[in-house]
Amino acid sequence: MLSMTGTRAAAENTDPANIFGMDESRFVNLASEMSLKPFQGREIYRWIYRKRNVDPGSWTSLPASFRKRFAARYSLELPKVASVLESRDGTKKFLLLLRDGLSVEAVYIPQNGRVTLCLSTQVGCPVRCAFCLTGKMGFTRNLTPGEIVGQPFVLERECGLDDNSYNVVFMGMGEPLLNLENLKPALGIMTDPDGLGISRRRITVSTIGVRKGLEEYLAVPGMPQLAISLHSASEETRKKLIPAAKELPLKDLRGFLQDASRKNRERISLEYVMLDGINCEPEDARQLARFCSGLKVKVNLIPFNPHPYVDFKKPTQRKAIAFQDILAEMRISSTIRQSRGSDISAACGQLAVFHKGKQR
Ligand code: SF4
Image (tube, protein in one colour):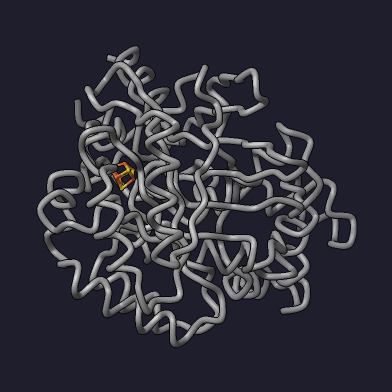
């Protein structure tokens, strides 16, 4: 028994360490540890992220002897595609397998000549929104910077995207501001011109509004735009839909939005999933308009995409438009988001839940 454990530990120690997701300064340190110059560390960083090349053997600007030593010591592992569901409208939902056998979803959404990638930050989610399947999975763990950066890296390849010609929304599995520790370095690599080079303006981080996370996020200049998942301007209804929202009452959330409105030129999006009989009556619209009044925000109305795992229903189109009309009368700008991928049931978490079930 003892010797088996010893053998396994020895085997684990000889595994090359996966360093995909390391930032530039760490590659500079790694270069000096391996007797290279700092500029060569920066070169490694550019080969990996800017040139999207994780094969050290082909890094021709670096000495062949170094490339050999590097490959023996380190690996650059990306999430693996476990399965893909493709919708009639071109939306593709990827289930990505992580090194420890867990999985997350990432979605490719083409629309009106533009592409948006919807990415995850956690395996499962501790927020447990009432209408969300990921919430029902519970929380397993945070994604590492490499697992976050690996998602656009893999989807670019799988979907034949030109480097960085797409938008990114962190609206997949997980609450991004509960994993800021890893999201911040990942965003650093994604937005760095020598990294993935995605413009900060093309990235949106969506959150329910986590007090500590918002304080930290808003304190860093130059972070990507935020979107707030509001779903109701009534405290009582919002707490039912987003149980974790009780930590930040609406009046405090509004304070953060006022602060962000002062600091940012862009308007912050308020996401509002429309659930029939719950939050899309005329009084809900008036309450939402009062909440938005005086803030630099725009409202994204998202008619619920029904799935078999919860009882919520989508409002009729007429009802959604009447809701929007009330907002317009009260001078609040809004859009009704077209549902994408409804035939592959784009319910966030569905593929991952199914995969988890199969593994048992
Ligand atoms: S909607 Fe987002 S925040 Fe809410 S449970 Fe699902 S993944 Fe978490």
